[in-house]
Length: 412
Image (cartoon, rainbow, N blue to C red; front, side):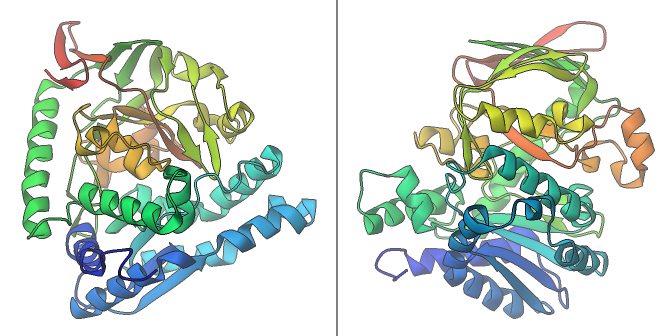
């Protein structure tokens, strides 16, 4: 993609922020990058800044939408129960040896929307199983990791179908740069100030020590019990390897771990969920004792139900996050069809795996201790949005006292 479509100066700033703020890549530390083929210009800038920062070996793995589709169109049916476990074992070994991880998102969010949902679900389950050794290093925050995005033309066409391709890419690029805070003179300083604000929110919530949160809005009346010894986080955090990193760029959320068995009520999605190439819209679920017992959607319902069948923990929550309705991503009025962005427009919950760092002294807790305190375990971790300008959130203290946390989507 030429420089007259994407501002290459801002793209390089994004790469620099990914290395310095997102990862805080250490001298001599190896880096593993995964990216769409279209994102090669960003991969090259990231590689440059990783080496300028004194990083070790940079290794990039690329995925290609055309060859992904070829699998669904031509591969033998039996192959959808397999994944490249050798590749993910290699990634897990790299992380165990101290490598940092950087993922670039930007694939066509609707790539698999017309493919057989059974094949999609089987392929996702096989990949999740194979990826688990590597994912555990990430979800347990054993390494410094980061996700940023590239304005892939296929993604831009989905977001702005009324524009010709170059104009759509330019508009998406500008939206990514703004949300990622790289359209300012000093992005690193901007991130420092933003992280401080998120830390202030997290500290207030930790001081409250709520037993649960109550979400109330159109189609939603949900009580989310919080895990015993839960801890709120937002913005930059210290990984178990001692490195302070910003895992998600952009980020507007403060988040913690729900109790896997203390979620009750109904919840309705306020934005579509784009999952593995399928759009799941108008999700409505009912929880009993932490588990989803009813689920429907106006689009993608078959895929949603397959997701919930992934394993025992797939129908329980692993994260709850608070985001003001006035966040920059919400204020943009854009639907990105990309969870990294759309989750930062609204309060959300996540099905599946919890984050061990969202517990007091989480770095020293065993998986058994985390489970005993209410932490969920699963092969998946999928965020979807339940917040809006019509949703109120109350914090419920241990003695039942209610404290306003959000009113009409804004901090109370």
